[in-house]
Each structure stands twice: as C-alpha cells, then as structure tokens.
Image: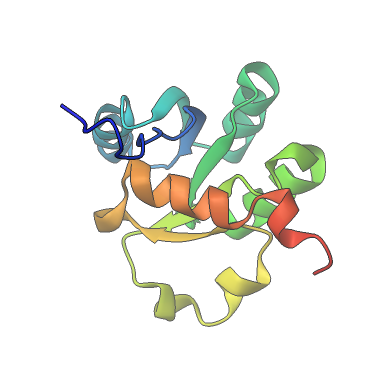
Length: 141
C-alpha cells in the first residue's frame, strides 16, 4: 500500500501498435509479449502494402517496422508511413535483430522516432522512444 504522502505513479497511456516484420514466428512472439505492456497490438503485417492498409484501417499510435522486410526496405516503409500518415511522425520505430551500428547513419537519417533491437523490444522501450519524440519536444528543431 502506498503511503499517503508518496506520489502516485502514473501508468503510461496505452498505445495502439502495429508490428511489421516478414518473419511470422517473430510477429506472433512480439505481439504476444507486447500485448498488455501498455500497448494494444491492433495488428501485424508482413509486407509494406499490408502495413499501409492496416495503418489506414486501425490508426495505430505506433508502428514497429523491421528494417529488413525480405525484398522490401523498412527504411522506405518508414518514409512512406510518415509521408502518408503525418500523425505517425513520432510513432514509427525501426527494429532489427542486428545492432544499430550495423546500419551506419541510416537510422538517424530516417524519419523514424528511433530504433530498438529485437532482443530489447519491450513496452517500456516503445513508450520511451515515442515520449522522447513527442511533437512538443521537437518544436523548434
């Protein structure tokens, strides 16, 4: 029980999340592990076209995009998402099994809010990136 004089801990706002990855077993595991972690997983997609349809239909707050989508580019999908859905300017997060350093400056040059290695993917990591890129934090940059 909390002491009366202790500050209340506010839980983060629940974010609606879409996960895009061409690895279907990973999609299942990620959706199951992220669901309930202050995230509502509203869908999964394995192609860019499918991701764009899901975003239009479900209006997620966050889209997790695998950098390597088989024959497609996660970097290109990130650009398309932000161009077509400006409300996602702080909600596209790139993911990969590889380390961030493996991509040179490509992640930083992308419109994504940031990057999370798949082994570090969690609700907390998603919330931290989205919060760090909220529109009020970017004004004037």
